[in-house]
Image 1 (cartoon, rainbow over the protein chains, first blue to last red):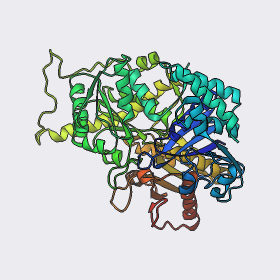
Image 2 (cartoon, one colour):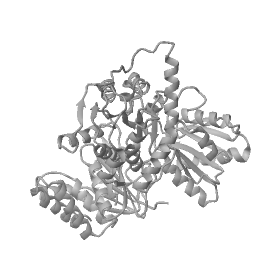
Image 3 (tube, rainbow over the protein chains, first blue to last red):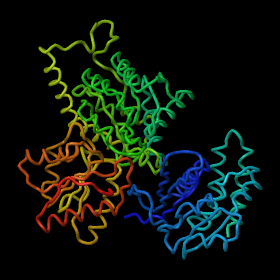
Image 4 (spheres, rainbow over the protein chains, first blue to last red):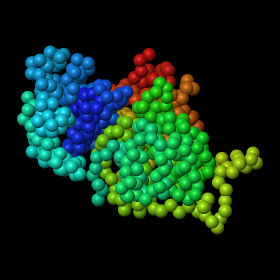
Amino acid sequence: MSKAVEIRWHGRGGQGAKTASLLLADVTFNTGKYIQGFPEYGPERMGAPITAYNRISDTPIRVHSNIYEPDYVVVVDETLLEAVDVTKGLKKEGAIVVNTARAKEEILPLLKGYEGGVYTIDARKVSMAALGKYFPNSPMLAAIVKVSGIMPEETFLKEMEASFKHKFASKPEVVAGNMKALTMALEEVK
Amino acid sequence: MSIRERLSGNEAVSVAMRQINPDVFPAFPITPSTEIPQYFSSYVANGLVDTVFIPVESEHSSMSAAIGAEASGARSMTATSSCGLAYMWEELYVAASDRLPVALALVNRALSGPININCDHSDVMGARDAGWIQVFAENNQEAYDNFVQAYRIAEHPSVRLPIMICQDGFITSHAVENIELLEDEKVKAFVGEYDPEHYLLKKDEPMAIGPYGTPAFYMEAKRAQLEGLKNAKQVTLDVAKEFAEISGRSYGLFEEYQTADADYIMVVIGAAAGTAKDAADQLREKGIKAGVLKIRLFRPFPAEEIVAAIKHAKVIACMDRTESYNGNAGPLGAEIKAALFDAGETVKVLNYVYGLGGRDVTVDSLTSVFEDMQKVAQSGVVGETYRYLSVRE
């Protein structure tokens, strides 16, 4: 039986929640884990709520279903807090990470009495400071790695740098900005 | 040493295609198989293969072009899903009856309507009587391994029939998972060069392919075609044995998971088999003898072998990811029941329609099927044999 760490991502079409889940699959794969990263497709259109998932395990993963009782939830777009039941099934031993500029106290009433860990990060602030553009992916990825503790921060940064260097081989100037977004996000999540 | 990677099912099949480096790849895109020709076209553009890539205007044409290329002696392949397969319909029969070993990567998706892009097996099951060899995968690894073995089965002189290598749309095609790839040279050596005995462009042997079959000959042609398909069973096993030697991964006509002493056996096709294995493990922890038989080869159907593997069960559940609108059984349920009947077996069989149009299949939902099987065994009452799983009535 696989005892996987299960993560559910909530975003809106076009924001890259699926890409973020695939990046998390990549980086955890690189540390020797068995992984799944997959999207749940509804009617695809920019701005529609979408869900993506990760399973991360020390043993092979056989189950192929969506995740209904995740250990962690990542909310890439805070407007979803009122549109989608983001804490549905979320284990109280787990945590939720929300991309918002608002204080945690303002978010709590929207979480339907969720008793587990609640973390926030202003991914827009981080992304604008590090990249000059709004790409919430990298900050949210760093935030969930920190909150879940699925790997040491140093390992995460080392693996991500290697993967950015590979991904942006033709535009190496982008690597530093993305790395800055990750390191800033590790500090900013609270 | 094999290569540890993480790939989606579509990426995995595309890698196998690159390693095989076919002569011709005609393509028309359709979700969720679109990525396959997309990745392959990048291999062509980057010079990683020397395949003739033909972008066509429809699936009717992609299969027609594959047939034309194969008839002229060129190894050809394509990919499709759902309505794309439906649009190939008449050509599927032409490929099979002309004995042309085309390989098709089929990424299973529901047929319309209502229009839906997600997984079920209505596309492939509709094509089950077209004369193709049909092979199914549980995950990206099996989709890759099956594709590497495809031409060795299809091109075998005793078979010479087209083959479709199936995987579940999105569930497998778009899920990134761990995979072990083989080195390019190993795959190339295993698959080998295509050297057909007869082909249209062989100048010293003028021949016709696909001429009119009069009533005096048509039936003999169909009968000969059946012989080729039946031979595919042994060839599939022989090829799997050789594949195990280069990969360390064993395949049969089907996979038996905890079936040997099982009281309750679920027969299932595709990605749901993995979920079913988790359900069976959980039940075994409670002392309930659950097992799973996963179909790999659906055409030809290994009826006798399956009967031998399941007949000792108290109750069997056949899982059909399609509706065949006869009101009594799905395609898998009908095959299994016919096979058991012919063997004189009277084990109780339930038949479930599940997962249509991407309806999620969970450990809990499949556990409920095992629970239904126990109820039948305990009460002796079968009740309705044709059932729907996870549906709002």
